[in-house]
Length: 495
Image (cartoon, rainbow, N blue to C red):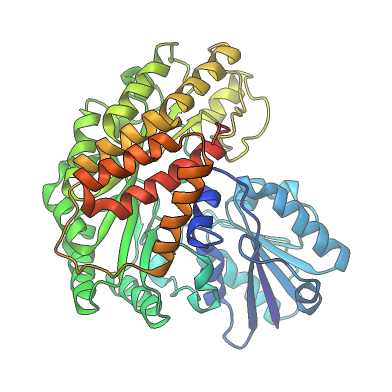
């Protein structure tokens, strides 16, 4: 059986880091972890090939050679999905589809032959059993049961073209203990956090190590500390020992909730193990809006103090921010600007509120007859899929004000300075040699940002400030300067 796994193209968004990746000659930030995990569940004697359209083109010969095309996608990849399905239809190649997009909207894709919905650990095996007995007779394989991810295999990392990616990735948990009304995570993966065994994670690290990956690893969990005690008492000590034994080949970034700041022991263990950054959904400094969207974990907190504490522990913080809540007033725009600038959060993903399908917010908007279109999957493309309470023109004007005030060169470099002053990098890990790709990126930044860009004077002021005040963080400083270049393009600001 010849299987062609296709991962659709990701559009140019905040999270694509497309413009930043060019500085280090990479084509994509992370590989398609879902597809290579599904690949590992397929029979060993099948011929499997991965085509990630973010790093390579789809060849006609690949499609002609395939018995089945397996495709997985998110909302934001819809346009590329349509193109792939059209090609498969023209060549009469059978398609098997799964992942978040199809689990939520399979009715919109009648041309797909078979849907493997929800979690593949549960729904793939019945399909394979039917296939073994002849052509599958069912179009839809789905289940309300959540998978036991302690049975999930080591992903087929060997299928990847490692040189094309900035990060490798792995998954430790699924599900989230919280239930924010605008988030579809609990609808897809449940309210109960399920966690892999520590031995599984160590096997995945070994697999990456044997394939000679060295560098950053992104842990894709929606909340890495959802099972805090198990992470702290079992997983992290084992990872720490593994990292020491292998001379610290990786660094890790994660997503967590803000309550990470409550546990000094956990913060210390994370940084000693090689965790260098976390993404946190801050959303808004407005308490009323936090209460209205059920962001209980952010209520009654000194959010600025929590962010600073995490930074001083040795982890950089990036954050998600939202405007467009029903309780938002015009004052929220300046409050967001002030919070982001004071926090030193360099990568601040600010978006308009959207209501994804199957969320509590979606159901409420539907009941109030306020839905307009389906969510695009991107909250930074200036789209909303419901009628906001604030006048739309006023909301968009305020949103543009935030973006301009945090990503224009002068305030952006000011925020990086704040971040670098607060950040206390752990020095217990071995110092890595500077790689050629970093030198290349440095000179590219000198030319593109320091000469070609209109914000070049602020860039050079920042470079000299770093050399005088935080020379040990020079690589981080250049990285953030490159990020700023990417953000300004994505958000439509002048370079």
